[in-house]
Image (cartoon, rainbow over all chains, first blue to last red):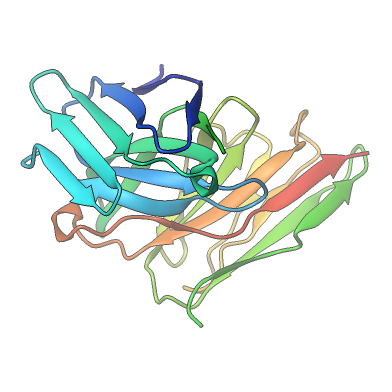
Amino acid sequence: QQQVKQSPQSLIVQKGGISIINCAYENTAFDYFPWYQQFPGKGPALLIAIRPDVSEKKEGRFTISFNKSAKQFSLHIMDSQPGDSATYFCAAIAGRRLHSGSARQLTFGSGTQLTVLP
Amino acid sequence: DGGITQSPKYLFRKEGQNVTLSCEQNLNHDAMYWYRQDPGQGLRLIYYSQIVNDFQKGDIAEGYSVSREKKESFPLTVTSAQKNPTAFYLCASSPGHPVNSGNTIYFGEGSWLTVV
């Protein structure tokens, strides 16, 4: 059962345009929502993250919008550049206590392949 | 430099052969993870470990095994029981602190495994 649904699967935008990637979740135990950027042949790198008590977080050209009641969040890339071309994953973390502390599992969306045309 | 080191970058496995992927971190993180990535399917959790000598199965543990004898090391063995092992494997780690502190998971550069 997919717990985080991500769309679109692929996205093509012109240089300078706005890229928008959407994610939705169902499990209300999720309490931290990071976005990762992955270039081909590399591991994902943390891009930006948000907690559910915040409706928006901006870092440079990247903004996360969060709608807790709708259980949706999105990544906006303003002034998209060819160097932003990569695969983007949304994710959700649910804290879980184990016998000797806590470990957090991270559930990923299926990814969006972004291509920014020069 | 602090980080997560995976080796080898590329590995070829013959049918019926077990192979081990190495993952070492010098971030002093408590928790470590192994993910598998297939095209168009995102990342799927194989195993995770919160402390030394303890690990838990993830969503697709069948055909894989792990050990956590040292805090900084979390090797993954792909056994012959894994029928479709060709994939990109990612090791990750996290501090293991409560999520409200804003900590998250950091990834290595990945290892490509191909069955020949």
